[in-house]
Amino acid sequence: MAIETTTAIAVKAAPPRRRSRKATLAWQIGVRVLMGLVTLWCISVIVFVATQAMPGDVAKIILGPSATSEQVAQMNENLGLNQPLISQYWDWLSNVLTGNMGDSLVSGQPVSELLSERIFNSATLTVIAMVLILPLSLLVGLIAAVFRDKFVDRSYLGASLVVTATPDFVLGSLVIALFGTVVFKVLPPVSLIPPGEAPWEHPRQLIMPLAVMTVVGVTYLSRLVRVSFIDVLESEYVQLATIKGLSTRRILFRHALPNALAPSIPAASIMAAYTIAGSVVIEYLFAYPGIGSALVDSVAGHDLPMIQAIIMLMATAFFCFNQLADVLGTLNKSR
Amino acid sequence: MIRTRPKEQGDQAPPRTLTHRVLTARQTRLGLIMMLVMIVFALAGPFFAPHSPTAVLAKPYADPGDGLVLGADSLGRDILSRILSGGANLTWMAFAATFIGVTLGTTIGLVAAFKGGIVEALLMRLVDIMLTFPTIIMAILFISMVGPSRVILVVLVAIGLTPGMARVMRGAARPVMRREHVMWARTIGLSSRHILMREVLPSVTSPLMVEIGLRLMWSVVGLASLSFLGFGVQPPASDWGLMVSENKDGLAIQPLAVIIPAVCVALFTIGGNLFAEGAARVIGRTEGTRS
Image (tube, rainbow over all chains, first blue to last red; front, side, top):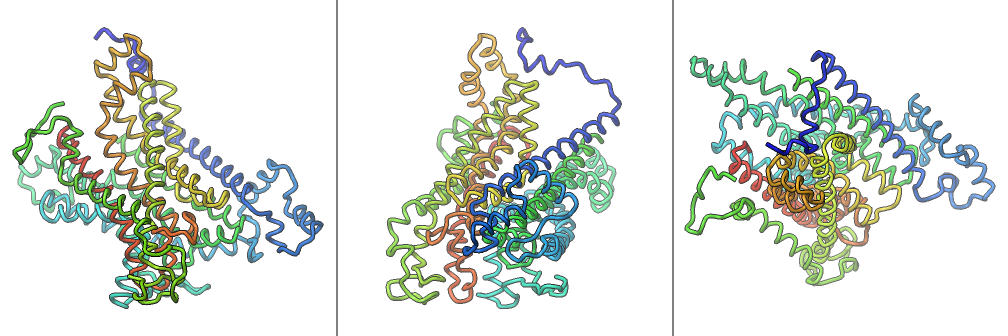
């Protein structure tokens, strides 16, 4: 064509870089990790600046309404609140990086102490959910792909359409209504875990939150598994294997499974990230003592150090899983 | 556009454009009707409320009777009136957020595809960074900072929708840039704005429709969830998400105060998803890609 001068084409014609494939891959991953660190730093700045602008004078909240102005000034001095913002940020960041996240303004206890048990509870819930989600998604996705366009697959697609669209708290409250309070009263409607006890000592309390998390996760992941299975089952080598007369089971598990699995692994990592973000709603709904419900409580109580710590924690975890998915995806593509 | 399949049934004249085909498919029509019903219900509801949604009229969780058709909620207010007036805010906020997010995302995506080179690389990096921000957590952070203002909520949800939108639209627009009519428009020196609005945008309406359905669904999910957590519409005003959290402790006594608002939110979002998936299926079938 005559129109070779447009920018879109000029860009396409850039000379290819001369690097070995491995070096390119390492370079790509290196750039991503670097960008990732920049993002984390951005998050820390946003968290810091945002909590600085929160309504309410921190010193007044700590001291209560009867405090004199001298006391407030003294408290500001103690907390380092009268120093310039940049040095406050620097102090805060170096403290956070060394694990010292200050004291809660509500209870006066160290944040790290208050959060450690809740982190443990949340992690337990997330890990159990992931352990359930991964094999179930594979199974469901595989069955749907094998029965593609049949009744099983269609009802699966219909159900997943509904679940994807339904917010977690709606799904959760309907599950509570069904199994906890209104129809069958078989499960406890709230998941209170007494302090100092491990969540798995109360398995009945975990069933409903886990069920909701698992259904949501399986719905997301199994659709990707289904599509990648269908892709593989339609590929030439699987068709060749069929022509060769290999058994269906052998084709599915020896040939299709490994290839269909590859695209699902980064997706599982992304799903872990969203499970962490979504745990705020689930934990609040079931009154489960994790960091998600702690976040909601801290915002209500204007507990600045707690909010900073929890948001940094959740954003970092969310981000790391996302980044992991990215790197895994890059590795996949290069194969 | 090549049509791979003739129209399946019916004696009407075959639909002419892809948009037409999308809008007449059974699933998308069902989704549209569901959303429309919920929108009308949400927006007209407040005018039909028999009582003030904030007036305390009976004991907490009182049974139906005494003019309260469905009984009273956790604070003794009329459940029916609160349901009828609890969707209006959600609806307009979701539409506003979707509009802003879709416009912003489409602009970024199309400009990136159009400019190419360093502009595209920078914009897409920005999008990547935005994608790694957990929207709901960031929304909670900002709301804790400035208080739950409605404008802030809409802006936050819109920002959450933008990066995904930009990515999809850039992907859809890239092949369009190589089409003859766009190239001609460039050679004869039409303005970038003219090319993007008149030449490129009309060629990407089909992915745009799918995305609008999806983003609308996500806005409703996000706004209702934030409201459920207490970061949305503030009490004593009524809102479906808020109603669920206000009345969840009384679920055993007055289940309808939780179930009806929860189902209202779900019908809205399921309608949006039906439309989006139906549209994606029609487009996939027409263009020969897999759904």
